[in-house]
Length: 481
Image 1 (cartoon, helix red, strand yellow):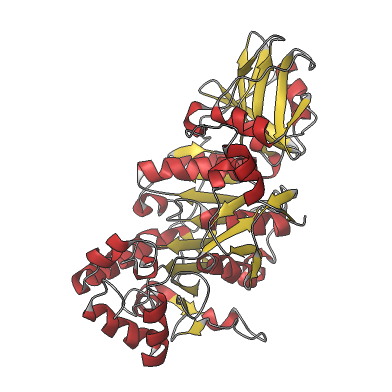
Image 2 (image 1 turned 90 degrees about the vertical axis):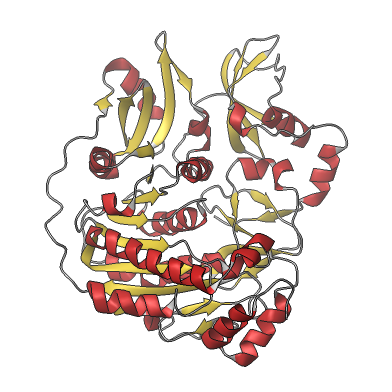
């Protein structure tokens, strides 16, 4: 038996995927964890990767032979890619395969909820797919109930830079108040974590049959609590990072029979071959180490057949004051999209006009951590740019004079050091690496004030030994678009 794994887990795994497949998985569980990233297609520069191989179910996914020092890569800080397990990317493939079901015949923005979203892998994957199909005509609510994890989620969404993502922190039961509002809900529910056994030894120690039962009950409660928020005919994607049938196939069947839905997982690969190593289960798909490169994942999809109780109704405005006058007209040119400029708690935000009413509705009902593009604060009639403005996909990059730094300079800036840029004009400058914005400085001539946030700074020492090592670790690979 693989180190630290309990006999009960062996029984559950064989029951879920069969004796032969379980034997392969047990052998793999003592091996090293996989490493993979997913490129941000909207920041399409040369992205540093090492010996990258494509992920079969994600056109922007890349598997790596080893784990580089991502902290020492400025492209990572620019949001050019997201570090995500390749098996976890499978839910994004399921969403893309069945998205035509919910995008046809609607003249309003598509509304999607990522229910248990931290740290942000599935959110950023969904956002990329939605933007490819809908442009800015979608709103993706990315929710995390645990406040500390929600803060991490908000940071990763900011790095990704999509202004149509709204980060919230609510219990699923609160989200149910938005009756029938969402076209798609993806729920990567908390689970017993069997799929994390290669990455987390503690997960092995904490596993028990009682824990599986507890997780199964909690997963059913989460699904039932949020179910009213899904529109009739809407799509519910259910996923876990575990293997046993109790938390997976059994729960999908329970949702279908008790909440009112058809299981449509079989339509994901209609006419196409299932990728090698992906196992079809009774109600979904299971990805298991040893059979695929990544870690463990289960995914299934249902179509809601029960009617939404009540109705979406009218929503009051979400507490945003429109920004008017000369300041607003001047700032409109900062963005590649047509935006509504609003003021909230002193912060100027740019919300794509296509989803402005949806974002306002969300703000009226839910605890919003971030939405739209944070533009900055107006002080003495001048906008002090927010760090997130540089990272936004709709930021017009010629708004401020640009400073292109080499690797050593970029790492120094990310470390929080103050650059000296005497040859550049005074005022606000956009700091870039490889043409991708990292943030801003205010150039005073003999020195600069860095606007890079303290909480995001590289904490390790950046010295002459560090930079060359980072340069060697990241040969450039084109990301495409």
